[in-house]
Image (cartoon, rainbow, N blue to C red; front, side, top):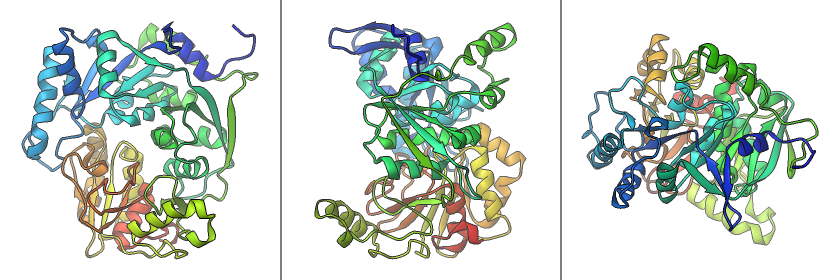
Length: 467
């Protein structure tokens, strides 16, 4: 072991290191994992075929989120095509003794929202979910891994994941944020700088004054988009704000165990003499609210920016830009602000927590959804929904003309049937804007809750700072 200081990543990784394979991959113990209805039923079936069961059902939790309808009064069959997934999840969980947060459960919701909310994931812990946005919970200082169905079967049977140890990347977020600029804008700005593959092979630590100043929900949003940078795991070192946010949550330790946990959590920082494999600085001073113009998350500009002109680019870079501009129905060099919008979606594991809904409601209050616009607000969990309703946010959204939904993934990937119309321009607080993701021909612009709300009430892409 080197005398050199260790990064936070090294501390968590080594604490969970079980062993090393001859091919160089390492076995990492998983503290807790949360499954979802789209992929877990297949993994349960593969386990049954192999004559195995879940090794640690007490550390495993099932969430109904991807395939469920978010319509008020929903049942298994409200979205008929998802009913088989919902029932298979319920049956597989029961056979393996796994607790399922089912429809009607007061804690049902999106896995990446519910896990932090209940204290299922804690600082310094390892966490796995069969979903690429497992990295979300790095906002609490945890090390999380999205996994595929085959990988999930292995984790369920052994409680370990097999990985090559990634390199370490620190992203220093410098300066301070202006009004109407939040975690989503910071994340999009990083992706614009780093690219969708810039984080490949790295675990990313977000550091610096802006990361420290973000509320916990903002840190969760920031880490949610780590996978869009090409990295599987991103995190922010925990601090007093983290510990205060976690304290008292249902699955968090309490009493003497809380004191022991807190003592350990306070060791979770990068040593001053630790060395990263790579570091980049992102100056967030003067950052405008961000919006994607293209068909992948690095094609980003400020709300006051203009669509790129491919003719000004090097020849080898023109084709993907031309394709994105064509698909999105844009004009090279044109302003992004002012384009008419057909649909607004506020929700997903990226931006569906209470502060996100509060930001949007403050803009919507006293206004109406513009004619011709369909607007949805979908809380990320049943608890978020109750908290929002206790503050009257549901009334604000409904009086403005929004659909106020039940908790679930909804239009993020449309796996519950919630999609836009062909050619429709959508402002979405989700995490991916790929071609056809939210419906065939749908033109998705990724934004934070503030820009989404502004578009809903104006009917156009609008700089919220002007409202």
